[in-house]
Image (cartoon, rainbow, N blue to C red; front, side, top):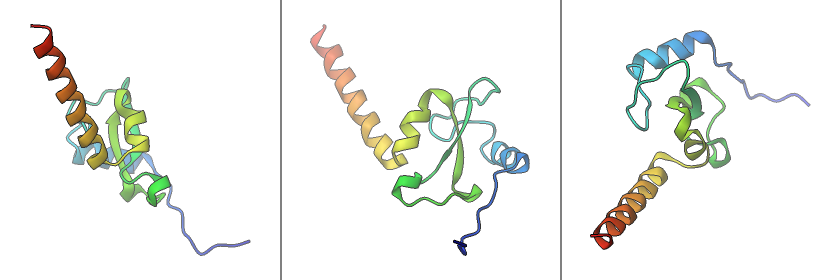
Length: 95
């Protein structure tokens, strides 16, 4: 069965352009991208209706890959707030 959807391949030029656009930094953490920690993920996850297209790709560090793969940036922000709140509460209790 033939479909009318055009798939665009993510090329080395796309990667170089993204690295330049992101100033060689992770779009989530702002940490420096290196050959050892680079990962590409969808901005809007495919399971949430995101497109399989270079315009829907961002560069992140590998330590946050799973988080970005399954959550939007807004969801990650809420998770991070909960982590910080929990950490601060534990810190207060340990004093």
